[in-house]
Amino acid sequence: SLSTFLKSHNQLSRNIHETCSQFGAAHRWGPGENDTGMNRLALTDADKQVRNWFVKEARALGCEVEVDEMGNIWAIRDGVSDRRPTKDGKRLPPVMMGSHLDTQPRGGRYDGVLGVMAGLEALRALKEQNVKTWRPVGVVCWTNEEGARFPVSMVSSGVWAGEIPLERAHSLKEVSGEGKTMKEELERIGYLGDKKCSFEEMPMAAHFELHIEQGPILEAKGKKVGVVRGSQAYKWFTIEVVGKEAHTGTTPYAQRADALMVANSMIRYARYKGEVQGVLVSVGVYQVFPGSVNTIPGRVKFSLDIRSPSDHTLVSFERRLRRKFDVIAERPGFSGLPCSVTWQEDTNSPAQGFDERCCKAVKESALSVLGAETGDLEQALGLVKYQMVSGAGHDSVNTAKRCPTSMIFVPSKGGLSHHPEEFTSEEDCVRGAQVLLESVLRFDRE
Ligand code: HGY
Ligand code: MN
Ligand code: MN
Ligand code: MN
Image 1: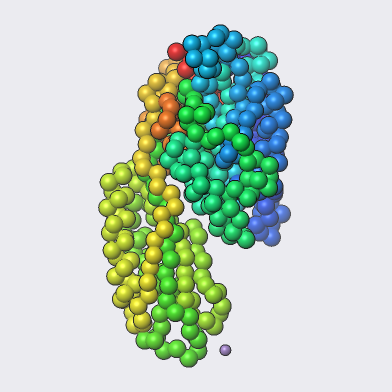
Image 2: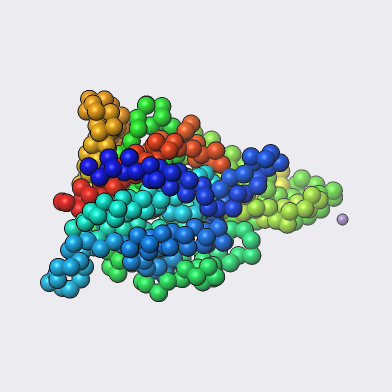
């Protein structure tokens, strides 16, 4: 079968494994000579570089490549059906393999980019084997999935799915730096496409995403492939605490409105309550103003990332935090003057289930690939994890709102991700690519 060809296609493994780390400024983050990681924040020059490379490669494979108004890159290979006139003259919606190219500030080598590179290699295998699919098939690169630079994650698939207004996405300002907007940066790197970014304009027959698990489950259970049936709920906020700047040497405690100390009380409470209620609470961005040793901070802004498999738990947890933060701002639990607290909701991603047919295609493909590899179906059956819910968000969460979607997980070494030492073996990358391609072919034959 084709996927066995993929395995023998050693160019595939080299391409995927190497291209995963080929791009992105080797970001020096420490004195050690290997203290570097991937730094390919959305819409930076490093992102532009890998985008340009991807477009060139996709065109060389004979794909038609389009860029939409969110900078999403759509590389589509014709299907046999394209040459058959359809009643409404429109082409059949393509089966797409999607993921993202942007990383965390010191991201890993595989998060997102594996799915894109595997999709590209799958198209290469189809071309080299001269395999024609009935539907068009292709690869879509979603802009700013991470939300590390522009703080709304999965924002471009969110616009495509009609969940996020285009204007809101375009006007998103970067968290640090000079506060450039997404639109300015899309324009600057030449990826502000004119194609409308919407599921009506760019419908998909299905979306499959190969992604590293970013967690410990597959490795711990000795599984090689995970069939992902959905993802947990998560919300992101920017919380701002406002007190009063004052001199650190002359202001008694009772006269202080110390925004930092109050913010710390809020964070400690949220973390403790999260542990009690089984909600994951994280603070990744913490900004102190004015940021001087001898001025009491008058303003603090911090990010709040809360996650739970249940929407209901998350909503009630948020409500509890809002009440408690107001109380803490008023009476922080130590002497001092009241502060104020405001919330801004940045990301709201409810728990999302994936499509049964797509999950079935992934499960059957995983068994077929592992069966061919081991020559023993019994053994293959034991190497697949059939029910996985993703702890991380992915663009598939948004595509699942508008078309049949599923994801394929491959193991992460030590369950580590969003870290320079993120690692997935060449063998696992190739196997994931085989399952991805076979899932697309199965769905296409449906
Ligand atoms: O935050 C997430 O789960 C994803 O990496 N954007
Ligand atoms: Mn990702
Ligand atoms: Mn990520
Ligand atoms: Mn002074």
